[in-house]
Length: 195
Image 1: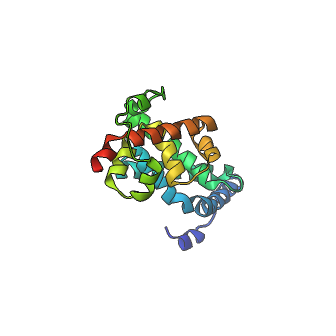
Image 2 (image 1 turned 180 degrees about the vertical axis):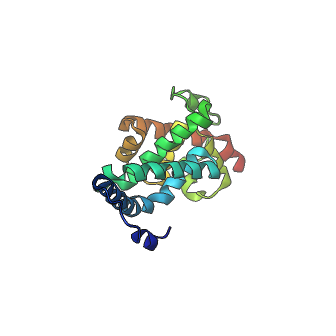
Image 3 (image 1 turned 120 degrees about the horizontal axis):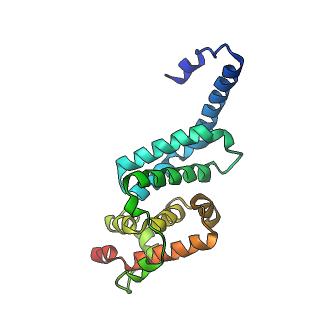
């Protein structure tokens, strides 16, 4: 149904249904205004977390349904971080159903198991080779907890505070995970194979 066609629809006659119907319209308008501009960021985050285009679309679709349902609770600014939080939660719910083994606690051992201590600085590599297949593969190979904070910081350019809010972790944990993710990238054999 087009936007114009939806204006022609008459609200239900009963009092409580009429209020619910008008709330839905205002929520729909709020959704379009506050959430839809961040759809690309949501898809980008979901794509990097799932490492699959089709799975990312499923996660974003679920996140949009959730966002539409709860858009009335969004107060003022911060729609981007709010929506990315929903995307993250939708991903973890999807992951529990489809890739339970991927969700692992951060015990700090991933950085110790990385190889090749002589590596390119990951920030320089990220800037120089943002589109390179080797870097994309190396980022995709990161453990999930590190991959998500790296994507939120480096690609979505969110602050540590925003990332902490989205991931529901302390800022110190954000910084720690970013450092570990960068360390893993420095040692990644996938990046060294490309050199």
